[in-house]
Picture 1 (cartoon, rainbow, N blue to C red):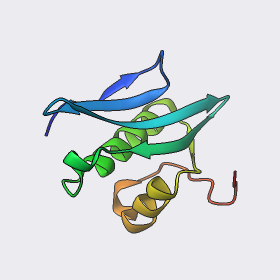
Picture 2 (cartoon, rainbow, N blue to C red):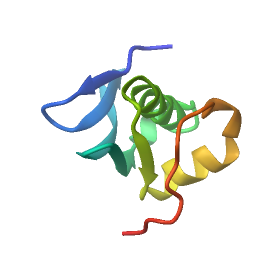
Picture 3 (cartoon, rainbow, N blue to C red):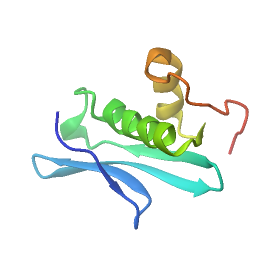
Picture 4 (cartoon, one colour):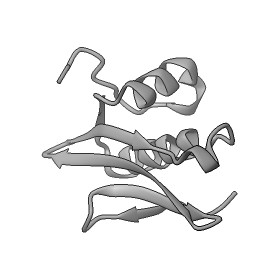
Length: 97
């Protein structure tokens, strides 16, 4: 697995592979990390890169005691289908864009 970087100045988790950058854009507000958009170039599609980005957000939420607000449809779907990855991380399923 390639390294996922939390680029805090750009508010995104990112990874570059084969010259292509995938990202999960987020916004922090008080005790929440709002997942806004997952972008994975076609060249990296189907390899689980988007899921790795969401997992990085889950880890940050766990470490900093943040509630995840999944506005991004991809992130929401990934979280719904991988409840085992959440552990004790709080999710706000009711907040919508």
